[in-house]
Length: 370
Ligand code: PGA
Image 1 (tube, rainbow, N blue to C red):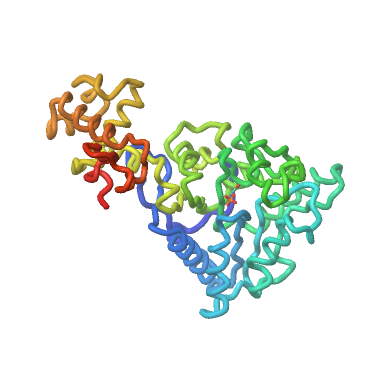
Image 2 (cartoon, rainbow, N blue to C red):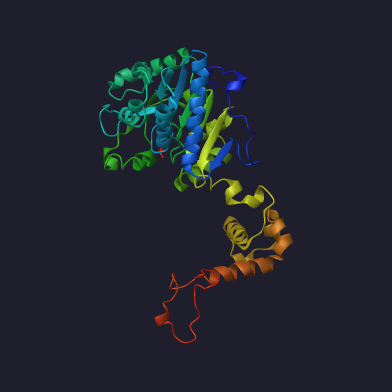
């Protein structure tokens, strides 16, 4: 890993162990996204104060996209209401589309001013954002200087990251190396499709961007990677629980000593402790959890529920369910019958005036009580 600013041990706040044997990066899950954002803003404010007390600059690595918007809103609130000053703050943004004029609707320069910089007392000369207006030939030199400037300031204190559905951090698309630095890249198809709404059509999304590299990001002292919403659940799980791979840039964060995922409950659903909690801890086998486990087992083994055997339950970590509610045959039948009773041509229940004498009510009232 490239070396950056070496913090005093007490400066670092991310020290807790990971939450399950499956997770390779500490993860903090919040009931609501806003609570995660407030926590991140609080940690940033603490660091700014800490540096200010020593008459030092605080260097922040900032991200754009929908995810960090509420973090910035909270920082603006802290500036207005709590007197948080950004006079000692220097910022480096992760990325910018290329080409891009700063006043364009989708420009990250514009985004940062609208959401943060125009509402706080940061000095304009302390704001750094990759320049989308450069001639292509001038980009490499600009990128090298961007890296040098960060290093000369002692490195980034706190880096904020979002994660794209490709697993990108910054715009480090699949294939980016662990040591990559700030550079011009080509955007992935998925990323361009995700940005289509902002550009009124995928065909208008630039094909390139300038981004800080994975290596540049890993040099930060402390990293918060944020994800909200169920559309992020799968890639979060891959980054946190999967193998480290250039195909998921965020997986490189597993090697960072002070990185933490900040998730809302929806973005956490792909993690084993939510998807299959019985693999992580002792659970109480409610009907709902039993159904979840059996359906998971059937999908995992690609077998019909009624064909699941004692061996299947035992080998896939469901011994406890078997011990409590077995034999397997009984559990299979119970779950199968439940699912069977949900199958209907009247998903919301058959209207009373259409019911024929002797009609069986499906879905059964015990499944979807009125
Ligand atoms: P989003 O983007 O916050 O708009 O989801 C995250 C990213 O692509 O890094």
